[in-house]
Length: 418
Image: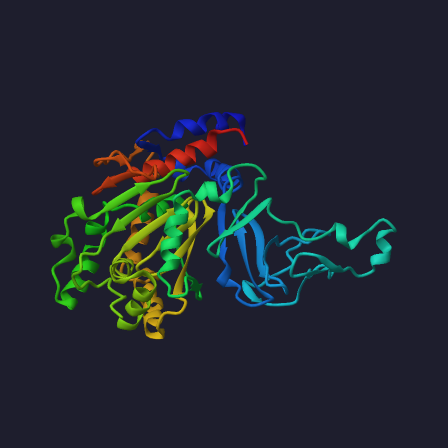
């Protein structure tokens, strides 16, 4: 990275404004791959993505290819998908099951724990050549919390527990809604858009846009259900609760009010009885009713009510991929789990009745930001901010508090020395 660019990065984010270059400058994007995705904790997989021994999936941290694989002893490993001989990828499939990875170039073979198992013409590499010296490389740090697997390319920095902070509590809430305390990911849905990766991140915590961007979808749903119009009946300055809890993370809470709702997937007597036996009646009702969006910086989004998570993948400064993983609640009735998976597909697939609106908005923002005369984007919307007992910055109602926290972390990572 050019020294001039590095010295400018901190100036691109103010307390409540963000410069257009943050979304449009290819040099800034390249710096993000190094300074954000190359130094903080990045979500790479849920352990249930590879449930059986030998199961694997391939992915990337930034542009660096990885394999997530469950070894014969049941342990999940994160390995760089790069042969130690001449650098070719050793696994070409998105997912599958295997007992080894074989480089297609010179047939070096690796076990599912990354060990180098065999090399053709091994004797030709000399007497000091040892298979044990050339395993597949690994990220500097890999840690898991409640099955959510994170990796960091940097050997230094906060632990995963320190990085997640209150995020551990929100991951707990998502998992504890399952009768057996675990979620199970299913086949992901993919959508792409022509816009910067951060547009999806700050949109997820944006409570300002839904009554406008999604108005038609809400009107159709509520009319079909015979309940009051979502936009006109909801008090947006009372119902929403927002929390920003450091390291760029945020949470938006949409408390249930007991009324029938198009979002109510959980009025299932068998499921509620399971939760009641475990937590008691009042807590069980609250866990089934609550609707929460959780953003874990820099690339993980979770939706408690529809029981899915999304992984945001930067492709280019103006191109992004998002994988949505519908999840089942392990131990819950089959009909509830089927409804959850189906509801995620209906609402947040590329053609979903809500997601399609957001994708259009992202594309329009990216197109509009080509206007050089508009340099600064505003994040000035404020509510009544306070700090709770857990040290989280909180707000009741609509604000852009979470986004300001997201960009504070961006500025810190981008401007501090590596």
